[in-house]
Image (cartoon, rainbow, N blue to C red):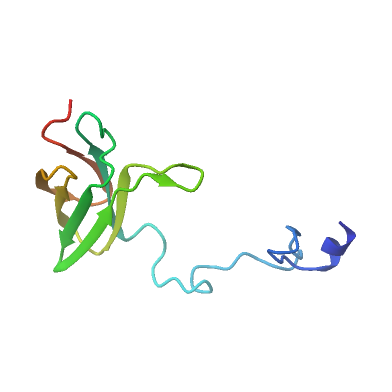
Length: 126
């Protein structure tokens, strides 16, 4: 423990104490071009059919301003279950088109605003 008092934070040595003269960096010092929270985003929550309620394996496509983002809903990640929600950062977009290709071949699509979570339901979802 004594060795931690003289050093600044180093991730591998287990010392979590920073020198009192060290201040948290501001946005510009961290290299952020825009303050957090100004960019658009979209969350897509999936409700799948019986037997795959989380929609595992579904492919989500989000289109806006001439760009396309693809995300696949995956199951087990590490030691726990990953969320069935897909998150996409959208930059300056204001409206998006969302398509979901379900593992059984069904497709659902629609449009949405940004900075929100939308729900995509499989046609056979309860």
